[in-house]
Image (tube, rainbow, N blue to C red; front, top):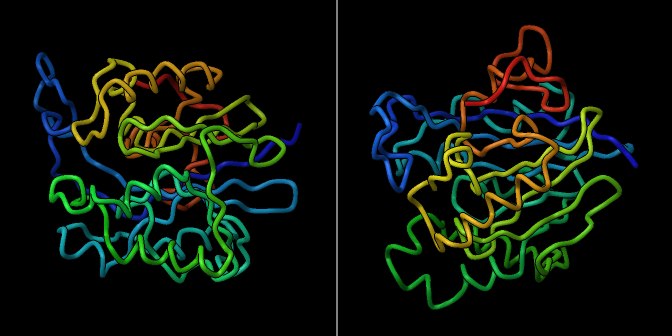
Length: 267
């Protein structure tokens, strides 16, 4: 089975976030600083590059008070990836911080769960609470790509390619999917927002932005089954990723090599 190099590319950060904001039940958790980092991921192998999530740009981040620290395109180019040449993009879900940068991948086919597309184009978007993490522009972009024949809508679990599989979990959103990828150190799971932080899954305390609590708790168990160990789980927003794993290239900050052996255990 094919093995892939896996990169985590940080493009934004919210340094002032507190731990109390990151758990649906924060009892017993010291209210210490707990920064929220934003990543896209790249899978490189078999002569191809697959991007997982597309992040947001400065225009999308400014109204929500989130600043881009390094544009996604710049981060990818620092590890030798030209967005113009990318043929496949997997969207774990359609929230604004995972599905922006609309024109960055002009040749790509997008892969998203059909349940997610149903949800973010349904009557649920008439509800202020349910729609606040979605941008109409992002959803419209994928609808247009679908009309162009550039979207594959997946139904639950599927084998994406040799060494890569997609797994629907729901929980955080109606159609959230995680990505399991074979690497030289075993099976890594890009959990995205199925677990924002290591602490969410390790303590079984979900992040407070939820579609279905039971689905999220069940998703924690599924992720543990899919990953070879806790250090093979990659959460969506945890700064620990950058300290646990080595830099992708010497002198490059904020880009980690996830197929390399970690320097410790997540907490």
